Length: 269
Ligand SMILES: [Fe+2]
Ligand SMILES: [Fe+2]
Image: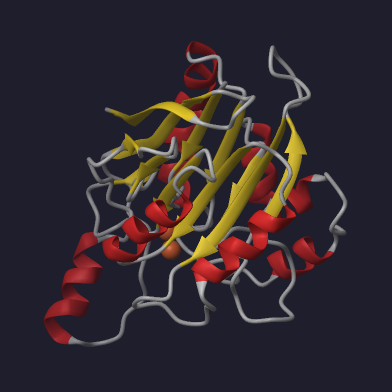
């Protein structure tokens, strides 16, 4: 069974590069499950319901997010619109599970593969966020334990949205043998450490951004340089140059949920 996970889609350049490549990627690799981190889809800051629908139309089964989840406030009502037991699109947009209590949405989705040779196979997607250099999150390790208790599927993909490589590596070890894949997002820079851990969990510290790489993690580079060099406030804008799609492709056994292989993907001009 093949799982495609696409890293943070950033702005219109990110959406365009995903649109260009995702169809043939899914087809060439006979992908059964597609998960996309969409936290920066709306000009770099958040995701709107309309853009979530766009990513679903491109083939996403589940959309994960991160610290930018509430940048577009209309997402709150969208997430609120889908009850816990629903399988509609709004229910398949996740926010990190370990945010402060009482916020809309869910950090766990459990579904079944819709079509193809693995149709009917149960799967779960979890979205967690780190605490190191990040605000507003509860213990992600404890949150992961709690979520795992709720999951019956063998095939489990975790998007761990975190800043520090150490926290992400630690989460990989924490979940090794208990989830199919633990993939990092948020830094927008792909790491070259993809591997299957001894217990059978596919791991990569950061999958990287799907967006413009002639930028500072997606933002127009001159604006960021200006901020660093003067400390003056200024509006950030999404860059456009050198778009790449960054993703991880995981091959796993649907019966055990163990990964056999993880492949790092970077596509673009
Ligand atoms: Fe991001
Ligand atoms: Fe982020």
